[in-house]
Length: 97
Image (cartoon, rainbow, N blue to C red; front, top):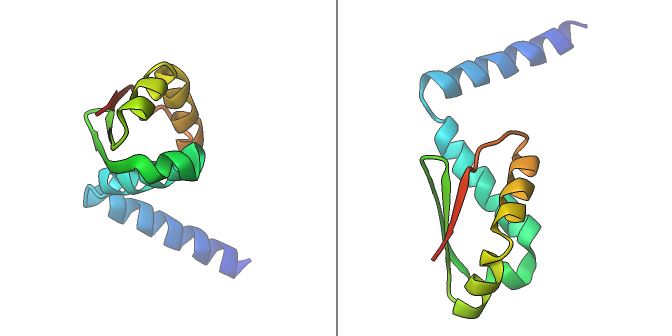
């Protein structure tokens, strides 16, 4: 039982460290990039050139204008999927460039 409480304490220390040093936004972008690449699949990942996250908006640069147009029709569903994978509503808007 001591080990379990030690693990919880380490988890709490890490969480406090992240919050105090305002690292959560950096971790969110890394996680969002992972989720985008995993959920959108290799075909879309191939055309994704940059992912940025700022003020609850995810900016995704794509090298294919045809793909950008096609994905624009499903923005609401993409936002919903990303938020589900993140475990909270973090993305409010998606901008495809």
